[in-house]
Image (spheres, rainbow, N blue to C red):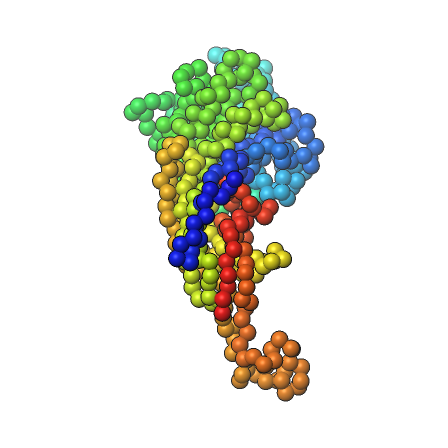
Length: 498
């Protein structure tokens, strides 16, 4: 049962709650499904465009990991349809979308469109990790210089068009600065082997380019931009530069390195997670499993060590879910934020139009803070279920609920000071409209024999709690029961008196 106890004392009722253990589909966190994962056939090709995997607990985001050439095959000719045909189905249900648009792949020549090279941008062919690069017969092609003026001019035209469609949309979870390095990950260790100093220069140019056009949506960048160093005493100046510019961190190394633990940059994540989301991707699941690299206990540990807000589903999603359901449920208890109201103390009776106080005790049992700009709201419903009043408490700030180790979250008390109804909506006598109605004998019956009109009638109402937009629209799912299907949670009954 949700309600652990109900205590009545001095005209107030206290309701206590326990976590129901459900995976939450909240903005700014969750599991990520790859519609495209550097290839247009994985991992959404077996799903209809209308299939939104609603049964996947905690899945919140769909990822379009693509190449520039996929979206602009001819200069100025854009294939937004290969995004929108999937994305529109998901966003209509409240899911969010994320993007990586890269310029270099080792399996195809034209991650950067061919027409960019034809226009004068210089490139070279290579075979990944080969010693004889450049190789005229290589399978991949990379820009010779990611600061090439022709390349940058064409890229900026694309980013401008891209941002015009997607920047600032609430449906966008993040956009990656992925226009340099193999697979858009910012490293050239398998291609041109640029020095870290050169990578840092390139990174700053590309960060500036993307920030010129994506001024509202969350940008992120790969940890590999800083190279593959790791451990005590290692510093990451270019990642600190990115963080200070408000850019989040992504790490694709989970299970891809043969070390203990099997990832690279949990230390780097400490620079980011207190203020910006950390996004992690593990190795392709079935390949990792077949190779003996898949270690479920480590997947939960990396969520803890990175304070991760997002986790990849790096395989065909239903197969992944079927084989890993217990692990997914366990991770859902910690991934991102998990706002838990431990108790609510509210008055059994309130005076219409007079301020009252409602006390709540909160914890965040996730690994990361909630960075959503939200308010706490209190709603009154009548006996028919209709909403009669909504009070929004903008002083509630979930970011102050600190993430902690399992079972160690410190509770915080919050006091909402709210009004239910307005006892005197407006004076009647002397009002021009009222006088005119009365003189012309068109006065509605409910205005007769009164000089003041209450906006909330006396009676018994149900009190509901929600967290969401400042206007009281619910947005955040909480791990408690008795919701109305719209992220409002029933607390109890309250009587409104004149």
